[in-house]
Structures are given as structure tokens and as C-alpha cells.
Image (cartoon, rainbow, N blue to C red):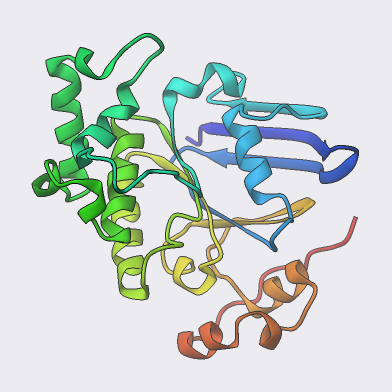
Length: 259
């Protein structure tokens, strides 16, 4: 029996009077691994922030786990696109993960034994247990990203949101990273915003194309036709290298119809 964990109805959002999202509707079922793709400025990150309760819609409604986003924050994990961490600051990987347990008025020295147990568990889950005492400035981009996901997992969320999580990871590291997410997907619903179209197609279960409007596909194939429709340009102009390297045919998904 399916269980809807994210439901968006007739959502509209504007920045300073400029429309960013129009008439967005989406249902995400428990256990889904959804990729949100689309051009820069198309509204992907804005939609993600609306689902997290960081922004408020002009019109429409959002329900996360059956309640408004702001009330569901303790049940979701979030790995943002731009994480401003001073790598010169003398903080360990374990300290960064423990940030996920920080609450208003709770200082660094106030972490309980249970907090530290949870932090070690999250680090082990991301295969980073041996790096607990390593300073963050000594970690690679891929290792730091795993630490940031461990920080998001420390509260045992039911949904994990990630915004461009592999931007600083090489191709080999990306595949290893998505393999880890696939394992996490056994118990957590995952929504990832990404431009890694061809890499993603081997891991996700569904795709949402976002360019002001949203078009949902309940299949994981990322096709040239989808790219051309969403980016308003030819496949050759968007990502010729990725498509040639992928080298495998895809089933053509239903053509988007303009509203």
C-alpha cells in the first residue's frame, strides 16, 4: 500500500513579483528516490526550500508527512548546495556531524552520550567512522560530503533532501556516492536536485522536470527528449559528452505538453 510523504497542490511562488514556480503539483510516495532536474533558474532549489519550510508559497499547499513543512523539520534531513565551512577551523568530522543535534541554547559542550553514539552511528553508516577525529580541512570533497550527509542522518529522518550533492566530487566518487544513497533508500525516501543526468538515471526511481512548471515521470530514464523539452535547446548543446559516454538507448518518455 502506497503512502504519500510529500504532497504539493497548485503551488505558485514569485521573487519580487517575478514568477519562479507556477501551478506545481506533485505527490511523492514513501520509499521513492526522486531526481529533480531542470535548467538553472528553473526553480528546483526554490521548490526544495519551499518543501523544507525555508520559504512560504504565494498560493497552493505543501504537506510533508501529512503536516506543514515547518512542523515536519525534525523528521527530515537536508544537505544544502552551498555549505560554508571554514576548512581552516580546527573542527573534527565528528564535531560537524554533531551539529545536526544542536538546538537553541545548546552549546558544544552539552552533547549527551546518546548524541555521540548517534553521531558515530551516522558516520559508520556513511563509511566515515575511521575519520571521526580527522579535521575537516584534511578531507576530500567526497569525504566532506559524506560527513554532511551523516550530519543530516543523525536525527534518523524519514525523508532526505539533497541539493546538488556531487558538485565537488569526481565521476568515480559520484558513482560511489549514489551507491550509498541507493542503500539509504531502503529505509529513507530521497529527493535529490542534480545536473548529473546520466549518472542519476542508473539510481533513481522517478524524475521531476522543473522549469517554472513541474512534469513528473514515474520512471528513471533520462532521455534526450526530456533534456530538449526542459532546457529549450538541442541535446548537443546541453551535454554531448555525457550522452555519448552513456552509450545506451533509453525508452522515450511522454512528451511534456505546454500549459
